[in-house]
Length: 311
Ligand code: NCD
Image 1: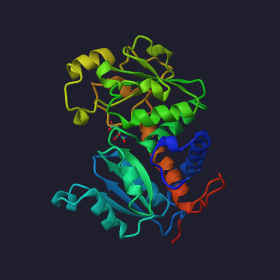
Image 2: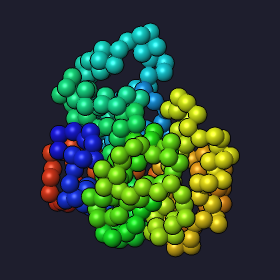
Image 3: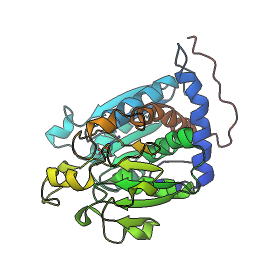
Image 4: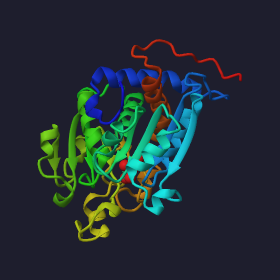
C-alpha cells in the first residue's frame, strides 16, 4: 500500500489485515508506557485545512506512539491566510522530507492531487464530501470488537448522507465486510443514484428495528448552501435517533461531533448501546496500523516490535 486515498483502494483482506494489526497495537495503548520504536526516525506531517478534534489528535497520538516525529500544520495561523496555495504549502512542507502526509481539506480529490506533488505516502483524513477512509476502518474495527464478523449484519446510516464523506467511505467498507447497508434520511439529503454503491435507500425510520447497527450522521450545516430541511426541529421530529426509536440490542454509532438534540437525543448518546467513545479510542490504534503499514512496508501480519521505547 503506497497511499490511503479511498476505501475503494482496499479489499476485504486489506481491511482485515489492518484490523488485525490495530488489535496488536491495542495492547500498546493499554500499557503504562504507550510507545514502541516501530517508526523511529520517520516524520509524519498532519496537514489540516478543516476543523478536527478526533481525527487530528488521534493521528498525532498514533504517530507518536510509533515513535515517529510529528509536525502539525493547521491552515489557520499559517501562510495560507496570506494567500499561499495548497500546492505551494505542500511543496514548502515537503522540503522537510516527511515520510507521510495526513491531509484534510474541504476539496474533493485534494488528497489524490497531493499524492502527485510529493514522494510522501498520503493519507486522506477527509476530502470535502468525498471520503474519509480511516474513519471507515476504525468503524469496522469497533463493530468487529462489539459484534464479531459483520457478514449478514444490517447497518442503517441515518441523516445527512449528501454532505458526508463518512457515509461514502463507510458504505464501501461495511459492504466489503459482508454487511447489508441501508441509508436513510430526507430525500433532499440522500444523493440521487446512491443505490449504485450497493445500498438500499429509505426515507423514513419505520423499519429501523431491522438494523443491528444504527450509524447516525451529523447535520453538516457548514456544507449546506441552501435550506435542505425545513428546520432542525422538524428534522429531529422525523429522523432523530432517541430512546423511543433505538432498540435495546441495537448498536449506536456516530463519527462525532454530535449535535445533541438534533440527530441524536442526549439519552441515547449516554446509553449503553452507544459506542461513540469506543470509536474514538479505536481511531488511535487503527491509525497506528495504517501508518505502520504505509511506512514500514510490511504486508503480512507478522508480530510487530512491541518492546517499549527505552531511548
Ligand atoms: C467527521 C468528518 O469530519 O468527516 N468527523 C470525524 O472525522 N470524526 C464527521 C463530521 O464532521 O460530521
